[in-house]
Image (cartoon, rainbow, N blue to C red; front, side, top):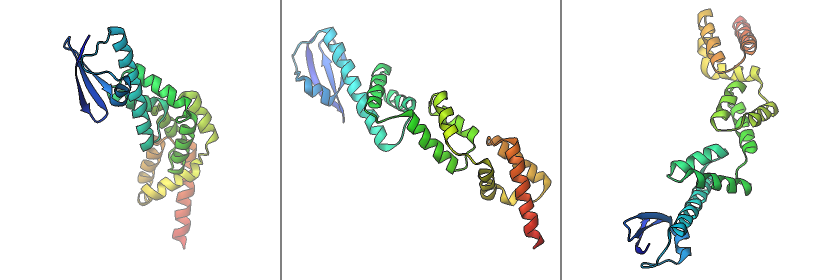
Length: 208
């Protein structure tokens, strides 16, 4: 095939047109490194190789860009890269390379997220679901949550203070608060004990 046109397409890509009517986008830095010009010939196998390598370069660049903005698990970073129109193969290669460089680590990611969730009074059960949704492997989640402190009593008390304090006035409302806390993933025993202590504190304060 003969190259008939090379045109900058987007900020980081060039569009290369061939005499058979086909057009392909390449990462601009990768393409410039090939030193190919209009009227140069390229065979199908070589073209396919360069397209795959260009896609891989783009995948790595996007992955690094995402990591500059936020923290990601391996799975979520892979999904973000693929969502940009990059092939699954290139995205997988890029994530593997980024992991090899030590720039992503599911164990460390899970530990940081679990600690934040505990501090914001998310139950251990709900934290498990959130970590699963981030694509963290089950065995890593279990190990992480076992190592993270989740004081259900203090967490429930903090949630009541923040969201349900005004609703702790009647038995009916207290039952609604009880149900809401259970839905948040706190255990039945912990919720019952926390509500018992909280209502007792209210009663003691009212006596004075």
